[in-house]
Image 1 (cartoon, rainbow, N blue to C red):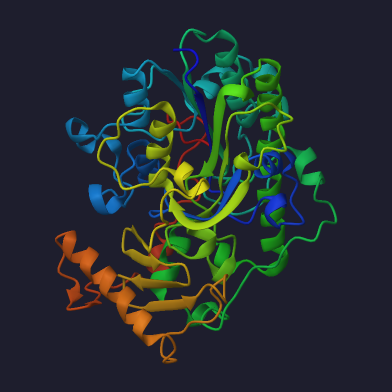
Image 2: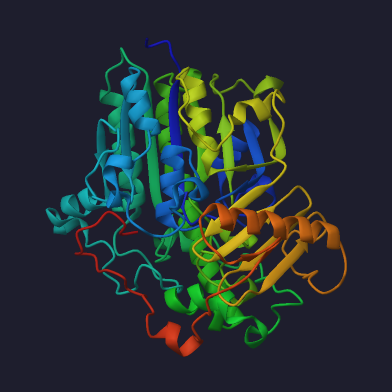
Length: 482
């Protein structure tokens, strides 16, 4: 059984697609993600269909999207525990795998395992650090879990939650039952706010050309953007109100958090190489969702604009460290993929029978043995979108506003085609897909082949009254402290 392949799933929290040097970001330092790109497969069009933490992670675990489960919002996992679908770790545990997880899970109840043999959470890191005050007090800076401003870590890198997540993952590799294959989920909390990288990672970007925020003909002025698109930003942070120099400082700290994750991954990959685990381990890297980072005057996530929903997806098949000439193991794909694809990919690797799922085995896109999706329907609360190879249609259920882009020519969604008469047939086709999916959810906000809104967004003043910059303090007993 030990000859069966191991699986390492690595996720970051709130990392957008354009944050890997080898995939075109000339500013950011990501040497170990670059190694995955150059020694494996990169999927250039991976999306989080419900780009907020809980539904995204539910999809990772079950292979089911929010349209199937109704979990396209922040409702907890524990709402219907008896109805929880089979999970990757549960099925792998049943089939002889040793299954461990380290880092952010965001389960409810917090200590539920949902099939894992063993989990260690950020709450465990905080408990450990509380016993050793001489090492420093994590997150003792007052900046909350959603605030989009730069701040330095109050503990050194070697005592950070990022380093702890890698250290505990390495500890498992060194003490595991070698008679069984393993599935390990190494789940980082960064680069989710607070953007509190250790100072050395901030210093990496001293004088670096930090990219400007992106605006379009529909978003040049924040006051011209319909309130529905801005509501989640107003609730979570003030990113949309930051001047450009503050947005760049925020992005510099965000890049620093990603580099801190990447450099610590170097320790994990090096230890795997020393233990000869690279030769029989599939490595999958992705994120639960992205971060708008000020694009179109928006922050955080929820919507299906590129910064929020477009995420990295990298896969390195097993092979020796220097197996760089094996063309079967390397390449890129522009096929549309999503987080629901992780379950069939992992279970396919392990040779485990698949339960009901909404995904596809990404290995079949790598070897071109299956066709890509024709479209991907996405929903997060009242945000709807349909993504195709060439176009993306957005429908805002709060107020009924629409956006429509030719992303083959306009990849950052800067020219809204609504009202121009361009690609009208495609627009109506995608509208009909949204309307059909709304009806399948048992909702009545569809009129024939068009979605309609029956809810209005809150205005800025109302949304700001529910602003959650802190959300919880460093003492709150939960596993989502970043």
